[in-house]
Image (tube, rainbow, N blue to C red; front, side, top):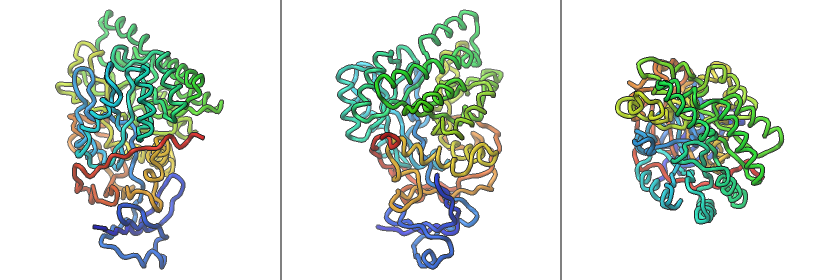
Length: 467
């Protein structure tokens, strides 16, 4: 049954425009926009009218880096696709792209099928998949072509985690060469894992076991070195490259240099690197374990360079790398040995609000907020303009955002399935009020009205920034 919805009186903010406009939604899509108060807008009738006076009307967030139910370090990320996508909706995100995992010795198809089984029927919002390639061989390379053809158009490789996800330079080059042919995009976890493992072993031998040493051994220079190496391998292969969770100023410099040379190289950072630092890793009584993720948190002086990179477009996307592990029973696995702390932070619910705070604080503009959180990730991974904007024909993934509401982030009030918040006690200006996914109300004036199974799998086209 078709339901028409009109959103009246809000400031529509997209990556390119800000306009006081009413929005007409029909059959799950944006049907039209018209300037508020005009005859055209006033003529619209609908079963549902949402008053957005004094609020922003923005596209639903697109988070292209999440890990629901990820097996890691002898445990699993604590958010399921059901709890994680519900939390995402609370935070104004209406599309996630999660990572299906190939196990060594198994096919890409096996991994993808397993992730489809986890997600299908459980998601509150729309979702897609990237593919983690852990075992590059001739069969895997052929499968990459098949996956691109069916809408899984991006492949993640790891220069870190020897013995788990690690690929050597030869395997990386082969996968890059294949993606240069089939149009896929290689996403790279750029850290020199071989060298890091040596530093981990040496630190533990010295009795340096606390969480803060996680940040000290995973050195910024080893992120920069791996980023440089990934760029050069991509250049040799003639392939585009997307570097995930960039945390260090030295790595930003490598990306900037490559982009200045005209290479198709892209960079993503995450809220934890913009708002948290090694000070958090050093919190007493093992509390620093809550902030163990890879790449690790850096000293505060790196933050200014990350913000600069977002302003100059040397970094294009902010995703969460949402991979939550509870403090009790999961992070605690690493008591006495920081290398056994499961790597990952919760954040899928906080990204849009934290980035709005960055607007309030003057780091970025309103339109840049929407660009890095909605439009660019949708373009980067082949979903625009279906996702990431408010325009006729786009999916009606729409957030009514109150820019004046104040909130305090806390584990007591968040909806992620994890027993702590990485941003506990942080005061923010701005809050999600109402969320529509394909025209259906998921959050209605701060009440959850969605349901598991509404979220649809979204096949993707190839990266829209490539010629």
